[in-house]
View 1 (spheres, rainbow, N blue to C red):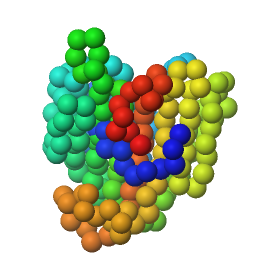
View 2: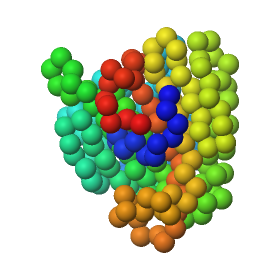
View 3: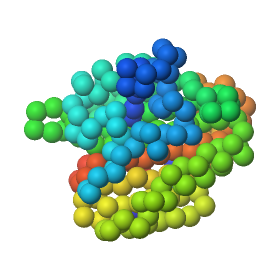
View 4: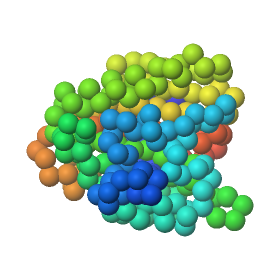
Length: 211
């Protein structure tokens, strides 16, 4: 896989209050808290890593219905980008970007990629969130047929049989280099961490826009 190339904007995600049994506010967050995103929102099967809210190859129209609690920023044929506000468990405010990617299926556009990126002002808290996510993936590292890349700011678990993967990226002070990409974030400085998910197939055969 290529090294981190920045947020691959191929959007994802949503939240249904009935699923969480939470108040209305949490309908618009990626998970109850980003701290527990991987533990509560990501599943691993023998061949794939998958976001619980949207199964791989879900049709674009159905995916849009799931994401109605988000603010849509970009809507192209094979990419959609959504935003919402959230908080960490300690109350720290964050901005969450959901990037979902599609490819043409037999009848319609189908979900093949998801990325959730969490932005916050505090660089140290962003680093702590990255460590929390890494800890959540520890039990999956020894899984058979799994190729592991494990660095300070990049983590990836790849199913070598299917091509499905989960990848974590950390972007300290991303505002210094890429602030123009995120005009809706009003903080002067901010950092980010992201969770990337790819469907069970060769990535090169899927959405070309993914990093």
